Image (cartoon, rainbow, N blue to C red):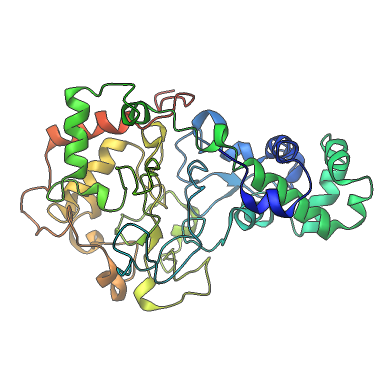
Length: 383
């Protein structure tokens, strides 16, 4: 694919040089306050640029002992994420339909671009934990990557640390738009779409259940078909939605019973504090989902089968997910005034004691299908 016009038109440096520097900086631990954590520490190239382990959240901070608040997402297949909009209209033949809050980067969509997203971990207290852009650049200047940085941006680049920080983030941003690294489309499903592979009967049945609006209904948010312009699916509409996943007691922030991560309406995002937005998180791509070991924004699940079981029986068997009695309040990771925001479309919406939306055989089939979304270079979850 061609270099994004933004850089071809506005930056005189060759994109390949920026990409190479960005790759080096992505693996540079000197960018963290601890000197031990790089971007790749949490976004492993061998794991679709997501976490290599099943920790609900990764650890960072100045001593490397501060747990994050959210599960680390994959950085792959973000090239088509639109800027955040409260009233998004997709170019899908039904442009008049308001899809609601959509887009933006991170779980709550608060980063407007890959450029902004790339800067957030550098200055987050429980991630790379730098106090300021100046600190980041001072550490970069003393690092093994300093010479490559100065060779591309000029020997005087470190004299203006704000400008140097912008160049640093630019290099990371350009690297994260490398097709080979971040959107290779090398899965079995992509080969099938090209007519170069055959899906098994079980995989095809899984795709059918995945798409079926009366069963999985997954494709309502995780688009599975080619787009009208012929592009391959990202397996996300990038919308923000409330799913009511159970509270994760393994997160340090959740030791405070008064703390709730409510996504779009806060606490990390501060500009959308509206009741109707509480509990909404951005829909991730399902590409490479079978390689992951941690799921949902709070990392509460560690097994993909369990994720599908939750979708099938969240409402029909709430005790399985939230417990019994007073301690088993449904949707226990969102204050009750906002429970009306939680999605009730299929496969949700059943009554307690009713039949699950789909059965174990359907889950087996969907698991087989989801395996076909793993890129060729990605390690399986079992490893």
